[in-house]
Image 1 (cartoon, one colour):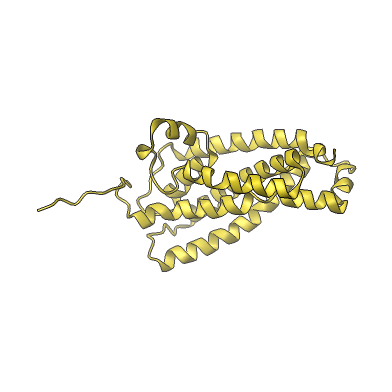
Image 2: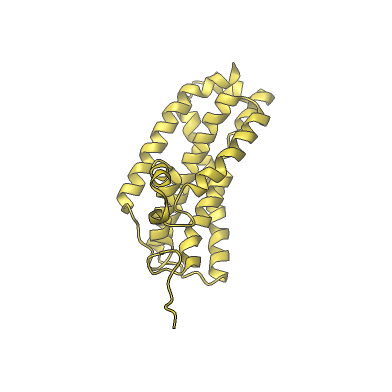
Length: 214
């Protein structure tokens, strides 16, 4: 008689429940990572030049773009929640949990869209930007805890995942989105790390923003 063992230690969660927050984080990542192409389009159309000669601070222009990207992420969240509900995922539907998920999704979208703006400021062409976006999305996704726990990773990949902002977003979503989900790092730590990353990215993007015209 053979004993049943779990191939993937999910902390008591069904794998479908374990994976659902990772799928939501993936949809946010894929939607935000190409956001910077709009900056290149606006430069080519002459719109960006008008923004840069306005008295608005560069940090406000960058932050405004980050905020605008979060609206699409909220729509993605609604779609993923609907699909997850239809698939029988054990969703946490209390108001505070949903509010926490929306906050985490908006924060993650702001991070990756700002990172996308930095890439657009550096490469300056649509073709190069699309290539970089496609190269980065899958490594960011697989070097996180989206589809398997950190405990299964080899030490080098675990070290990489600790500097990957997607890891902390998934950790937040897993604790807030599904019943029985737990945060490995702690909710306060997850939010704190992501706010720090976002602030650092906004500072870099603010400095690089005018360079896209050069």
